[in-house]
Length: 155
Figure (cartoon, rainbow, N blue to C red):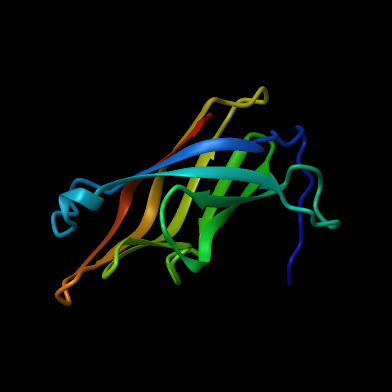
């Protein structure tokens, strides 16, 4: 059973072009240094769902790196100035970067942030979830944490 609650304040419009930076938690010592911080171009567009109020859902599509065909982004739900970033909730990866011909980096989890009604040039959130690295010589590094960082900076 799903339902929506009305929000008292208008939903902030976060549509636009951003730079997404993902920073692995410092306790993730098994991740190679070269993949601990990743930066991508991100385009945030409103979802067109008739059942939802204006600016209640957004899609984030990434570029600026080589990604597996699908998935290549994640969703953001908005209620007033509160944002919920859903990177497949820690189940499947929200996006998979092909770092080299035989190395991959996967991201999955959730994050929450808030922005003022006027919008923000930077949206920053702790990212709770996992980052997994698959290297060339069957090297695998996995780190689950509540303290990864997601930073969206408007371009």
